[in-house]
Image 1 (cartoon, chains in turn yellow, red):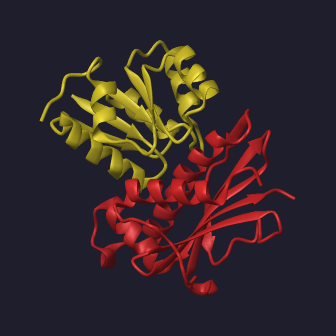
Image 2 (tube, rainbow over the protein chains, first blue to last red):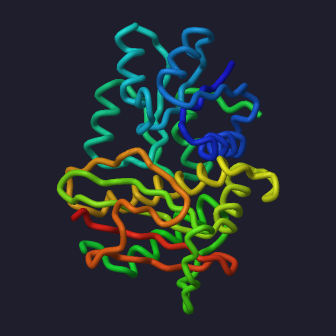
Length: 123
Length: 146
C-alpha cells in the first residue's frame, strides 16, 4: 500500500511527505520520483494506491505522465500538487482524468479533503 | 508593471512563511547584495505577460529555507539542497504571481545560480520586494522581458 510522490524538487517531496503524515496518511509507504519518466517506471514496477504529481518537471511533465498512464490503460488514482492553479490548468487536469489538483503551498487539511474520497487515512 | 509592490510583498511573505515557517518582513535598511554570497532562482512567465519572477537571497537565508523544507540541520544542508530550496520558493511564488497576471500564461521550469542572475538583469521595468528573514536579505523580483 503506497503513495507515489512525483516532483523534481527534493524539498517539495519532503513537504508533501510531511503533509501526508499530518493529514493522517503516515501509515502508507511512500515512493518518490523526480519526474514523470521515473514515475512511469516506478508505477510499472510496483503500482501505488495513489499518485501525487507536480505539473512542471523536466524529462516528462505531470500531464504527460497522466496521458501516458491513460494510453496504457493503467488505472491509478492521480492528483496534482502544483504551483499551477489557473482554470485552464484545472480543466486540463480534470479532462485527462486527474481526481484533484492541490495548489502549492498547501496545508494538511487540503490534503485530507482531497485524498479522503480516494484513500482511507492510515496512521 | 502590472502588480503593486505591496501585493508582491504580501504574497512573497505569505508563501515564504508557508514553506519555511519563518516570517519575512519588509527590509527597512536593505542589506548589500554581495555577489558571491547571493543565490538566485528564477521562473519565467510566458504568454499575455512576459517576464520572470526571481528569488534572490543570501546563502544563510537559503540554508535556513533548506533546513526547514528538508527537515535537516542547517549545517547538514548541502549546496544542492540550498539551490533546490530557493528554486522551489521561486516556483511557488512564481505560480502565485502568475495567477494575478493576464491570462493565458505559462510557467517555465525554475533555474538557479550563484550570484545575481544575468537573464532578466536589473532593468527599469523591475519590481523588487526587499525583505528580511532573521537578519538575512531576501528579494523577490518581478522583471518584465525586454
